[in-house]
Length: 310
Image (cartoon, rainbow, N blue to C red; front, side):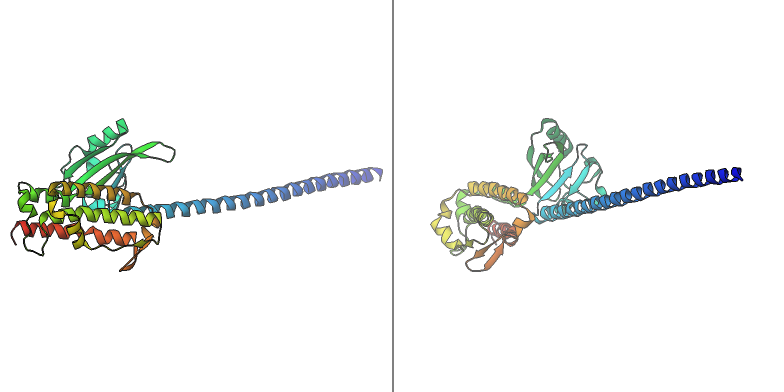
């Protein structure tokens, strides 16, 4: 009987010990569950932050893509190995680029440019960390100022090159058209009420100044008034007939390149900034650039007709 009681007491103690162990295990599981729940909440927070970063990066990429395409400047980004990283829509009209070319060496791509030194110049820019700029013609008669610059990251690391192609076709075509033509002929009006070639070239230079001034005015003070101007009055008061036509053409070329450089630097938001034209009302920078974009082409055709005697 006594032995049975001792065995019962021993069993009871063992059960009590087991119960305490189970209780301890349960407490540990509860603690682990709370830790897991806390960790899960932290992971959800981190995931939300990462998603926010992904969304922000996506917006930045979209902004960059829209910015680059809205400038209407052909731009090509290459990494340190001169593989394609990014390009604008305009660049596809010069170099045969498709989305699948990202990651391919620039040497593998076909180009309209008569510029076999492009790769060598890009490597030289990476080596010296300077820049290269030269006029280059294409097979179809177009001309571009090709500028190669190092691509610098926010922490000032060199991570490839940026190549821009500024279209200077009009300036080059005008240069060829007036080559060998006497200044007297360039200054002669084909009709009393029709501008001479010299006056047209001076007008082109002054119009680039107008475009440049309006854009800068709006950038400095969005919503600012924009005054209209009488181009025929400027021809008379500016003594266009006395200006050196070749100097006017060089001024036009340099001003156009300077304007393109400015436009390339604008943010997507800045393209939306506008001024209030005295006659046409609200005009954004994007609208002004579109309006001036074909202006030189019209006058190029006019010069061609005048020199052809038509």
